Image (cartoon, rainbow, N blue to C red):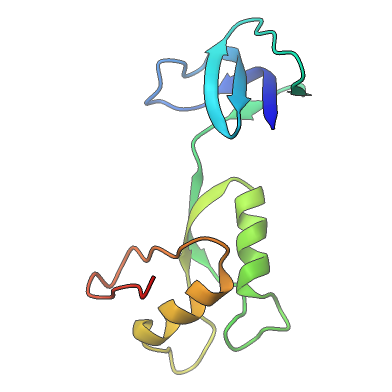
Length: 129
């Protein structure tokens, strides 16, 4: 699917477009063009007042409830909500007492995810994938 974001303000201090309001053409999930007054036929157009685009966000302390309190929220659902809200990375806190070993937690998390799980700590852990 192709998407055209119209008049989006770029919020990214590392980008040459930072602070500019531009159109962004996304072709099959990849940014194809950034500029003014882009025309793209057969494209879904997204245009909102005060539309902003930024790199993905990081939440350093997320607690979804699973494992231990699944009735609150499952890991799979929590990750879907985080992704839909612009978060590309999270620091996950389990809700168990005692706290489980990361060697037990990582495989559990991997089974709940639609994409490969990439732990950013415990460098000695090796994914079975």
